Structures are given as structure tokens and as C-alpha cells.
Length: 335
Image 1 (tube, one colour):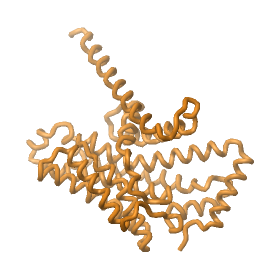
Image 2: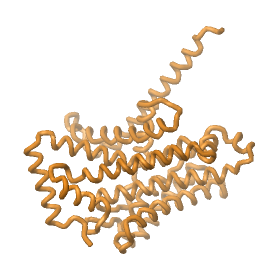
Image 3: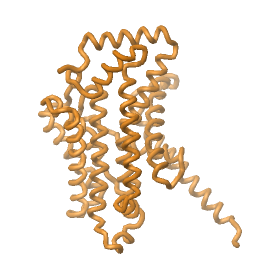
Image 4: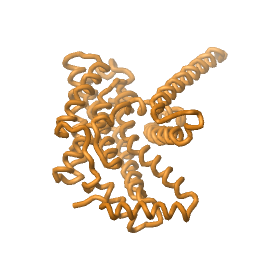
């Protein structure tokens, strides 16, 4: 069992440098691939945020703990020889379990959704440490993962392309299939009920639907997707870390808002598409800030500040557009 051996890794690095010398735009291709890969990986988490924040109107802070939970579960499973497919499934189920306990705190103990999420996020930090044997991180560099095998295959079959091309193709296929399944789900009775619950809870209750069960399912799926995203991120980065979830919910909200500015539609197909596009654009903005930020004295330490300012700007623009539409409606002549 091996990941990329030191010899293969050095060979891939040498080929990348040689290609960079031959093709002037090779570095730009690698940059675009990296943005797309990270945008898709974190886009899975943003889809989970969309289910909890936008669909259910549930402020779920558990995401900051569920994201590293997926990476921790995946890393421990791979270290102990569990097949990668089952490791990814267990990571997703671990996130669903975290969402289940969050919904229990909200429904049974009547703790507000924001506080319930914060409590679960705080407890998950210790849980993640316990899962990894009281270690802050686990390296996956010498452990075979699906991503490492895809990189190895791509570097052997397509030596003129970046080694991460195989990962990008896999993620594109995965997210297209997953998006199609998610769109189909939101056209089912359960999906429509979930959307109605976030808009008008009393109407759902009047129809005889148990809103606690519907909300619990949505929260579980949302945190499960965050955990799945964390598992993919751990495979891509080559390590799992208990602190990898710090601030992911803020970046996810920024991605949601960016997507809403790009595409304005009530159709679920376009809504899920704009969520993914918002994630890719956000990652692209962060890369540009890291690459060209030195011209205005920005450092990587300022990225959290940039994210916060970006969200504030989005909120201000949204409020201004709302007021403009309201004034336009008032000026409209009565028929």
C-alpha cells in the first residue's frame, strides 16, 4: 500500500517544472485547476449551508465542527486499513450524527438554533481530538487515497498535463451527479415540505406534518455534506487537522451571497448551480488576494478580514437593492 512514493512525487514535480518551462501558460492552468478543485470541494459544504440556512432558515453553527470531523474520521479509517469508499461514507454519517444531536438540542431541550450549533461545534473539537487519538493532525502523505491514485494515474497517462487533472475530472463528475440527485430530491414531497418549512412553518404544521422530523432530516443532511467536504479536503491537502474548520461557515456564507448576486432565480436547478459557482468564485477571489495582495500590503493573515468585508458589502448591496425595489413599487401607478 502506498500513496505517491517519494520517487514518484519528485518525478511529478520535475515534470511540472519542465512543463512550466515549455508552456508559458502552464502555471495559469495549474492555478485554474486548483481554484476549481477547491471550489468544488468547499462547494459541497456550501450546499449543506444552503439546506440549513436558506431552505430551513436554521442557523447551524455545527458546520465549523462537522467539517474537520469528516477529515478526522476519514484519516483514522484510512490509517486502520478501511477501504476509502467506506471511509468516506463513515465520514458523511458522522456529520449526519452531529447534525442529529444539534437538532435534538433544538427540539427536545428547546435551545435556540444558534446556541445549539455553537454548543455542538465546541464539543466536536474535543470529539475530533478523541477520534484521532488526542493528536491535532494526521498525515495522509504515505497512505493511499482516491485522490493520490488519481494523481498517480494522471501523471503517468497524461504527463503533459498537471497531475491534479484526474482529481478535477473526478470532482466534476461527482458534483454533477450529486447536483442532479439534489435537484430531484427538492422536487419530491419531502424536499418541497422542507422548503416550505423554512418559509412558513405554521402552514406546514397545519398540514399535519411533523416539522421536527423534517427539520432534523435537513440539519443532518447539511452537516453530513459539511463532513463529506471535510473528508475530500483532507484527501486533497494530504492531512486531517482538528482546526481545519475554523471560519468555514463564514466563507460558506460569503459563497452563498456571491452566488445569489450572479444568478437570481427561484428554480432549484439554478439555485444549486449558483451555490457551486459562488464557491468557485470565492476561492478565486481568495487566490487573487493571496497572489496580488502584496501590491496593497495584504498578507495571508488578512484573508479572514477580506471575507468579513466581502459579506458586509454583499449585505449592504442587498439592502440597497431591496430599498430600490420597494421605492420602485411605490412609484408604480395604480391600475
